[in-house]
Image 1: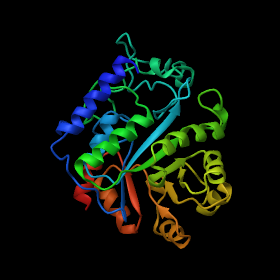
Image 2 (image 1 turned 135 degrees about the vertical axis):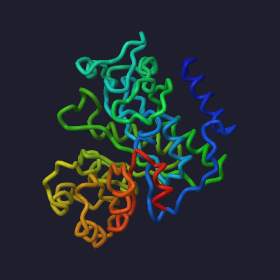
Image 3 (image 1 turned 180 degrees about the horizontal axis):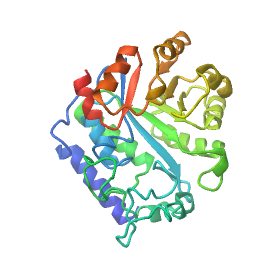
Image 4 (image 1 turned 60 degrees about the horizontal axis):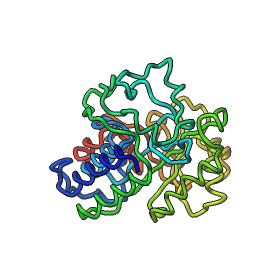
Length: 305
């Protein structure tokens, strides 16, 4: 393990052990009957898809940690929304910012994880999330995120952490920015099974190939079908294309109607929309009967409840 990663993990363990992350550390999770998820941890409050974002979400009492995973050159499963270095949030090892023109050239799938660790994913001011705390952090391994989340839950005596993990893949970029669905899912599942949390994990994706492979090889795993806000396909058409019924139907919040909620529940599917970032919209959706919410601002959940 590289010295920089050792220091980073030691710092986070200190936060867990001594309550240095936040004064609300001993907050309890709400009942699982209504699933409150922290999007990319707590993107509105802390740098996205980092251990500190996940811990902040847990401090706010979320039920589930929502996150994205990609694969490095040396087959490590790590948290990142893009399989490259996002120009909005990334600082290069020399202290300069990654630009939009060069972002895709920093292809994580072509980098060993040791190289990924040299990029800072948390010091830049995020143009769309001004409340986000700035701190120098790196893209963590999924294994380490789960380890620290489990330690937090045990220390704070809260209910077990649930995980919602998205595979970032499309058929047009197979073997360019990520593995094909089968090896991608197998790498992810090795971590999940190694950490013994499979019964608390949902695998979600826009890429139905991921979910189809998962359903075939790992039929006991829970799945969530993500639906983009620009989708014009009907609920029935999306399920037909998928070829089986997922555990969760997860559309952009703007697509949610009373009719969609009823259709999901009629088929015994949960409906959990993303990404819901205002209290009035949370209240509206909860009244419609959704089964949970995914938000960048999990601190709003206390007001909702």
